[in-house]
Length: 280
Image 1 (spheres, rainbow, N blue to C red):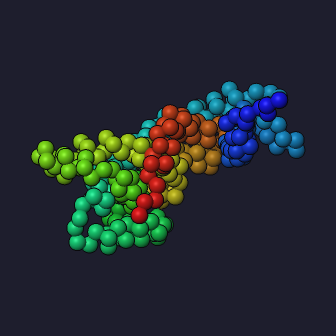
Image 2 (image 1 turned 90 degrees about the vertical axis):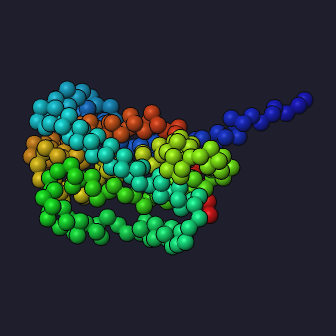
Image 3 (image 1 turned 180 degrees about the vertical axis):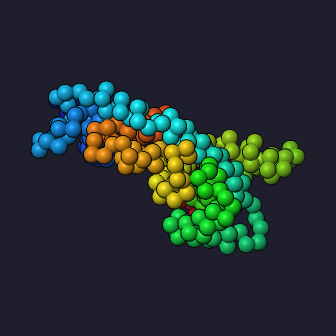
């Protein structure tokens, strides 16, 4: 009697089970945050752990959020700041990555070494001189103070440089034979073929600056220009106090746009990471 054949699903089952377990482990803090936002305060601090609330307190918790703080103002600030930062980062990083990947000029490897060195410099190391410069320009508590320091991303230059190295040179030579200049090649030929990498970087950039608390805490002094992360802090210090159910509801509202955006772009994100690689 012939033995049953091993199916691909059975072979992949241990790997899928492990990935599912690790995924749930990573998501557990967010799952707990959503569960806590649905509970009254006395259920949050019980000694028994239960994700499902006995009494749904969602209307009260989320109602406090929208009543006490300008939620849509914080979300709009986050969209404006993250969108502007991403626009300028792509505007500078795409041509720079193309030049480092496909053009031959003296000092190219030195410049790429400087990009690699820039990856090692934390934002905290340059915060003080940037803050002094912005204060002297009178830009504190403005969108410019939140956007200007991050318009150039060395990580974006590195990422696009690695991606552009995989593009065939024949495609670029054909464009040059058709009379296209280098900048036209960048925006009309190279960028349309780099959407996976652009999407992957966009997720990195938006998540980093949407959740950033360090820099907005330095340059923003009121709710008018507060980003979502800073808005959660304002709610905690002024309105929420020890009302952790309402505080968790605030965190859910402020992070929900990121979750939705990632779910919509996850396939492009995986393609971008897989196709970029670390080519020499």
